[in-house]
Amino acid sequence: METARRADDADLPAVRRLAAQARAELGAEERGGRLFIGRETTPEPVLDVDDPDRIVVVGAIDDTVVGYGVGRTEPLREGGRLGIVEELYVEPDARGVAVGEGMMDVLLPWFRDQGCTGVDAAALPGARATKNFFERSGFSARLLVMHRRFGDTGGSA
Figure 1: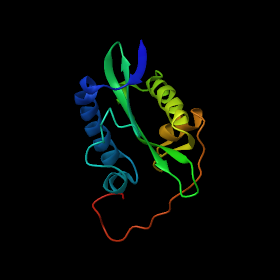
Figure 2 (figure 1 turned 180 degrees about the horizontal axis):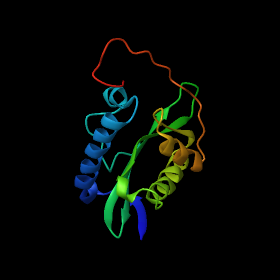
Figure 3 (figure 1 turned 90 degrees about the vertical axis):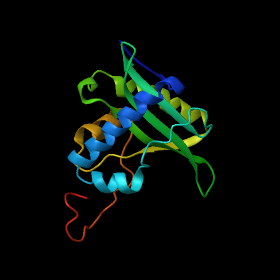
Figure 4 (figure 1 turned 30 degrees about the vertical axis):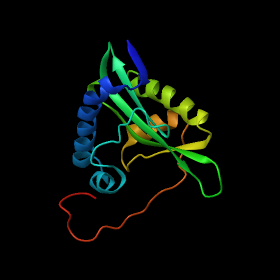
């Protein structure tokens, strides 16, 4: 049975393992993944389960953690707050059985409770399954970032 909940300190070793998998998958398989890792992510996810401006969630199948998510809030210049899904990952063998949806069911009410006017999440170009997941969760594109690469960086940026 799939479950999702806020993470606690006991979940952090599993989350760190999954974060390493996520970064390896992004860097090796996704177009734009290496640059995304180098600019948008931290070397390890920020995992303070007691930070009032951040939430860490886990998704599990039969009590085995197979996914994690990290969200934070950000003040807007004009007032209000924006929710940011910093990280959301499910092990490949556990995808397609509603683990990600369960984690979103924990994240989205938290963002609303924090007074966020909306929530942003990133999907890399060509990551159709990720884009479709976010669209099923009620997200739509609001910004496309265009990039031009110079020279050979040893793979796709």
